[in-house]
Image (tube, rainbow, N blue to C red; front, side):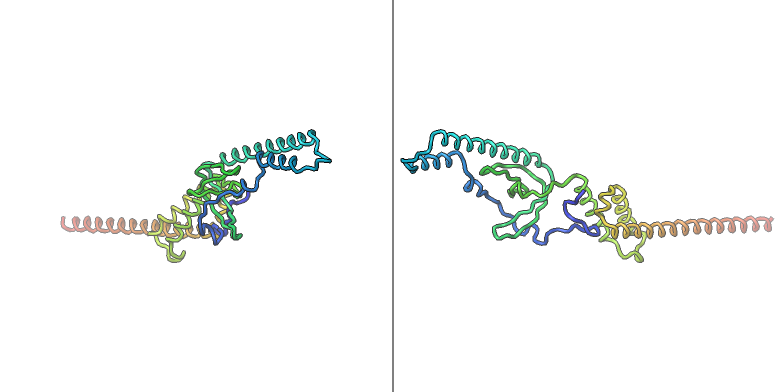
Length: 245
């Protein structure tokens, strides 16, 4: 399974010019496309200016029109399939690579809100901006998106932590949040996280376990010390009572 956008050591790598400027794209396809009316105009012009000594036969005109009608039906079928494909994207996370007139390409990721059809072309709406369905390079699956969110949570918690050697029990909440999030990730999502981050998480968890074990041992020693102290005091009281009698 390929990633919708690459992760390196748990960091999402995106285009540096990502979402630099949002533009509502308009279609020029209608100006360049050949519709039935334009074809008929050309056909009339051909008949009007044909050589009267060698006129084109009616059979040839009919053949040309039939060929165009077949082509038009194929174009309509293709347009319907494109619109159907675009409609299936509604509600899904997608990645769009949009190229401006100057040749600058930007990468946009977002959820498709709606689909519209303009100038014989389908457009998807992301954050209120229209993008050609042809510019959609990938539909992000649920597992990938869940991995992105999990990695984001882990990175935020890691930012709160000091260096390994400076960790205290006060950092336990952040480390536990990281571990619990990591424990729910699939193998594919862990691969997105990266070996370096996975190793770092393991080191923080090991350090926390050491601190908890040390705290538990200290608590046991303190309890044993208090118990011994109590036994000694009780023994002294008993001895004092015996002497008094």
